[in-house]
Length: 222
Length: 115
Image (cartoon, each protein chain N blue to C red):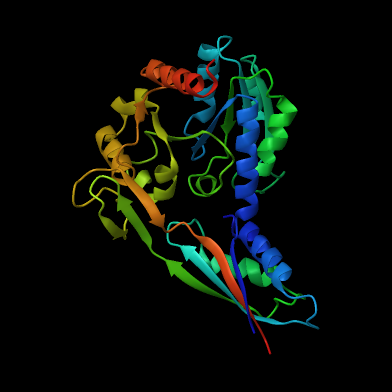
């Protein structure tokens, strides 16, 4: 006997993500999901970004890692409201799911925020699959990772709304073709905006900051 | 890497779909549709599924997976085609305003019970 089902397996997460999106709309907060492989410099980008945005833009951060509060400790120094999600002590999930985000957002309190940034778990595969109710997905790639990463992980670069190519201060010391990596990103996602920058030296940082401010304003009017 | 979570969802959906009035149900097959662009590794999913279905009505069930190709549509020239590599640029008009039609599915379509 065959029983018809016709269901999306990730329907539970998708429903929760839609509910998150409604919650963030009600709270009038713009939500940005930052994804990358481990070590691309997400936390350093965020530390510098928070320093430049605050106090004009009120920012909260949800940080996901399998283990440790190292990232949250670094981000708290900026004065932003930060909460850390550890998916497990050793091992655990490879991505943040929608239900974890809403619990953390409520713990942070979104009432006095203009921008909520989710620093996802370092992984170029799984976080691309899971909607968390964000407004915009940002993928970070650093110049030490190889030019072909966008071709190897196409889903991540397909779902991203914007990309950051980080650590460009290292280019003089590497055999890395920055034009090729951007070309590869555009093979996967032809109109993908790419910010080429260095969080360390803040070269190319201003256009990223301006972009964030515009996106926050477009949604919240703040 | 998240195949265990997907397997758990699969089991939940399948168990909920079995009519309650059937005594000692045994599922023979679960029919799935998984897009080529979905981040699911078939043998990992099968492995996880086998582990968590022990001592359940799904214990002997096998996963029958229909692989859904990646098809895209170009909003600029209305062309539709199947993408077989990581390149999504429209081969006809060279524009990039492409939208994904299929390829990200992770769906359970039906289950088959042993008579």
